[in-house]
Every structure is written in structure tokens, then in C-alpha cells.
Amino acid sequence: MLIGLCDDSRTWCEFATAVLEDFLKENGWDAELISFAGSRELLEEYTGSIPDILFLDIELEEERDGISLAKEINLRYPECQIVFLTDYLYYAVDIFETKHAYFVLKEQFEDRLPEIFHKLMYRLDQSCQRLVFSVAWGREMLVKPSEMLFLERDMRHTIVHTLWGDFQVKEKLDELMLRV
Image (cartoon, rainbow, N blue to C red):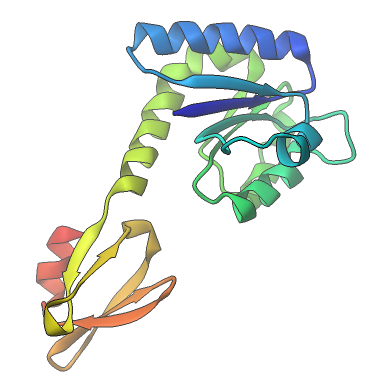
């Protein structure tokens, strides 16, 4: 697992990195930590894998703030889990313009880590799940629950509507609902 910290304050990044390393070690989780000094370093200069989890400061001393950066990350890397960090509560409403996992005040960062990681690990686990559907001619379709839009019954078939297309299965809705 790769965890990123994006904050223009090197002091904060060093503190948060130390806190995260201790927390991960106490819980027996293996992760690599990487720090970014801003959006340019994260999106333009960094050539490695995008973090699975990104702790992102909302107020960056750049042209772009953390919320607009999160929107771009949502588009480019939809699997990246974003945790917003800030010193100011008045950003709490603006974060809902993005897909994010958590919002935390920096002063509560250390105390909130167990809650944050409980939610993050649940989301990561859910994103790895796949449902198997039997379709025509003995073929199988693998679908993430997050890719499913809805199920629809049409006569003797159930239509599975997904982000990438639709397909039919013979199973009844109540049978499928037990699996989803």
C-alpha cells in the first residue's frame, strides 16, 4: 500500500509522516509513505504509482487549492482514497464537490487515525471485491460492486447495468440481491 501526504508545509509533512509510521507499525500494516510539496510535485513531477491513500491539505500556497486538486485526482485516479486535512472548518462544505473518504482537522489528525483507517480499509476491501455473473454460452462476467448501477428484471432475464455496459443473466433479482 502506498500512502501519500500532500501539504506545502514540510514541517507538517514530517510530523504527519512520523505519526503515520508509528500508527501503521502499531497496527502491523505495511505501507510506503511519500510526501508531496504541492500539486505540481504530485501530478507533474512525480513519476511513480499514484498513492492508494492521499492525505491532502485543502489550503495550498499555489494557484490550485486542495479541492480542485482532489477533483483532478478523482478524474485521473478514481481508486485513490482522499483524506482532506485542514486547519479551518469552513472548508467542510466545499469538500462535497469531490469524492473523498474523510475530512479531518489537523489538530485532530493523530486522534482520528483509527477511525480514518477503519473507513479506508473497508473501502479498499470493497474496491477489490468482484461479483461473478454467468452469462450466455458458459461465459462469466466479473463486476466490481462499485461499477454496478442497477439491476432490472425483464421477463425471464435480469439486466445488469454497469458503468461500462449492460448484460443479461438468468438469475432472479432476489437471488442476485443476496450476492450484492
